[in-house]
Length: 96
Image (cartoon, rainbow, N blue to C red):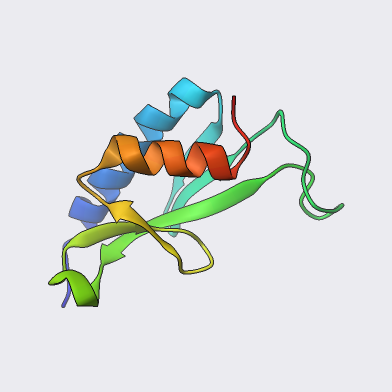
């Protein structure tokens, strides 16, 4: 199932605005929403702060509805549940 890229990008844009509340650095890129915590400690020299690139894509086992997805493939929440997704991402990155 394919979706218009604009629909996924619009939902990522809504998520970006919500993540601003957590003082995270967010940047919408062609491959997803890059989210980093400038106040957290990363794992290594290559990743000095915690971060994730979140994407938005159809979930096959949920009738093809759009979901937010962590960079490692874990489903976050339905794309219509922006607040839930923001809480999950912020807590994963150690945001205040």
